[in-house]
Image 1 (cartoon, rainbow, N blue to C red):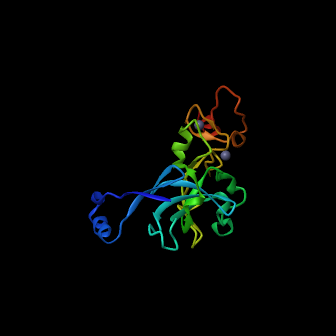
Image 2 (cartoon, rainbow, N blue to C red):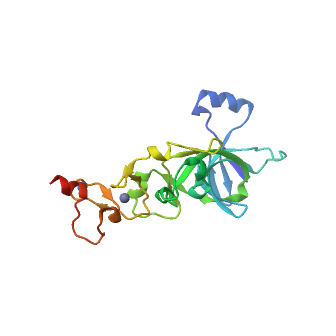
Image 3 (tube, protein in one colour):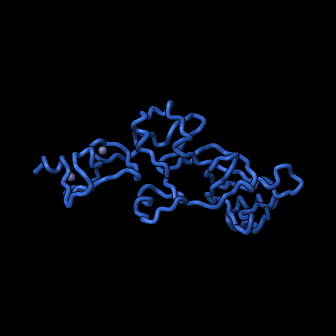
Length: 207
Ligand SMILES: [Zn+2]
Ligand SMILES: [Zn+2]
């Protein structure tokens, strides 16, 4: 690990004071790639593919036992959530996407060698609008407290769509009503996606 570029002292007064005692670095280089504090990255650790945010460099002192390590705040995938305590039924778990991640309060010190490139986390709205979804783009709509095992906001408070009133999973198929512009699962509306025009049951009954 090569530590580069000292954080600007002008960032704020508190930092300036801190910098006098101890140098604070905001960037480092590893394998020809520059990483910055705040970057969201993929990590490969103990045969697991993980996502985390770089919080800080643990030590820039080569003699320190933690030299070469960075502090990381983990993002959890759907598979990492403890669903038993969350009260989300097995059926409702289908509303959570494989491309969805949850920022957590779970932090670790890891070696920079586990860094496996950067990735991007967007909102659900941005995720839907981006037609070129790559494997390195994820979305997030809730945080996960890994100590108290709760989601914030809770699953029940997530925005809901369709006549089934479930949170949206962008990996599922939806059809838009030409009248109210709302989105529905075709199966919830007794229809298929290969029709030219669709009016939902609610709009049809209001006619
Ligand atoms: Zn539905
Ligand atoms: Zn409608």
